[in-house]
Image 1 (tube, rainbow, N blue to C red):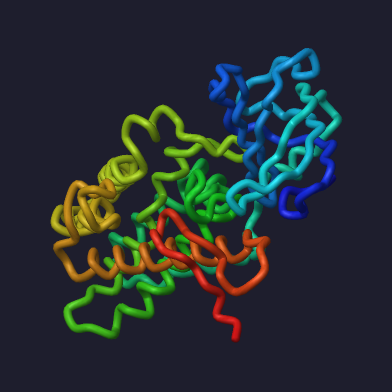
Image 2: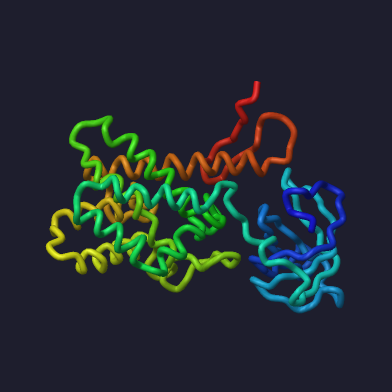
Length: 313
């Protein structure tokens, strides 16, 4: 198989890809054309079907399709000009080729992640984490293999545990650097801050928003999960539950980014900073990984609203 990260201008491509987006537009001359997003485990590429003729067979979003195309470059980005297209047949492709996966060992990451439960001193918080990550069979199965986002950062198999472990490590490191920090609350909040994503996003390779994801979002789902699990634990203090919930609902840091409350405790603020740091740094890393141009400048990153430069000298 010819992977997307191997494409170069002028290449001919005859292979199977997952179509994650299909839209029809009109050109300046009034002619219909398709704008597609195609995906494999190495990345995503824009594709255009400028001439919708008998060689373009019926297909839908989230279908695997076989294409005959030429690699072009438009505004410094790789793009495909598709000449022929049909829906792929069972057995013509290996689904694992279309599931992007972390470069790290998922089992080792999850074992290290779960190991933080035993570092918690507060018995109620330790029970809560055990209920969520060990006793809940769905979360225990999905959390280590789930993605952390649809397409912004850590959007691949193992991305959720990779991101959550990073944030937990950062919070653990920061927990003794300032007065007044409750380490148990901070570390536990780091571990659970994105757990709602196993319900917000469907499994790979689809990796799209579920009904619950669209209607509620992972912050509210996570908030409700804390309530559901805490009520099973005898004598769980109401104030402790509220402090954990506050970290959950404020971890995006700003109202415009989906947090219904701003961080009002030192633990919530550290969690927000750690979450943002890991997510945005990963965006830079992924931008450098995806860069196919020469030179040190990777180009403009829309999410970060800046040009990214490699540190080579």
